[in-house]
Image 1 (tube, rainbow, N blue to C red):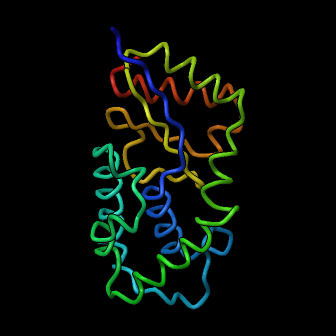
Image 2 (image 1 turned 120 degrees about the vertical axis):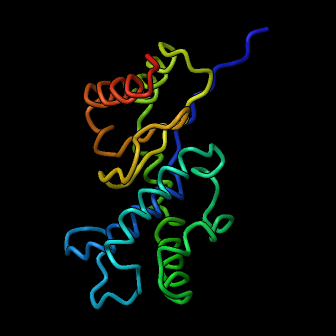
Amino acid sequence: MKPERILTVEASDSLNFLLYVHNYAKQEKHCYPYIPGNPWNLQEQSILRPLLQQLWNETLADSTYPSLPIDHQKERFRSLFCDEISFEYCLDTFYSWWGSMAGSMAIERFVDQDSHNSLYTLFLLTNKEQLTINLLYENDILGSPIVDNQLVLSLRETFVREEMITTMQDRLTLNGNK
């Protein structure tokens, strides 16, 4: 009996948290989260950016991590911060947004049924038995856009179906799977 092919579309806690930290570090007024006064003590930029990229790629490479709640993987993300208080406050503010109707649920519901059908049709054209599409609230992809059976799409990339299809095809081709 041939195994079922499985496509999962979800908003990754881990990848979206890394984006949240990245955006906070930018401190741009029109970039979420913008928190005046810069209360969290992050690593300096020369350390932070490569660390964000490393954590991003490690998260995607281990199929358990993108969907695992951050509470179960705190040790992975502590190194982004210079002190424990900053880390815990950042987690608290992230979860106050992420756990609400405006956070992960809104992101997952952003992709409508027609888009899901298009994604599934593309998935069926690949040679993959399983694929997880991780949705991001922001456009910045901090590392690889695809690792093995983990593909990343930002909400903006899903907004226009034709662009979403092209982006997904390009990323799957990047990974050597068409």
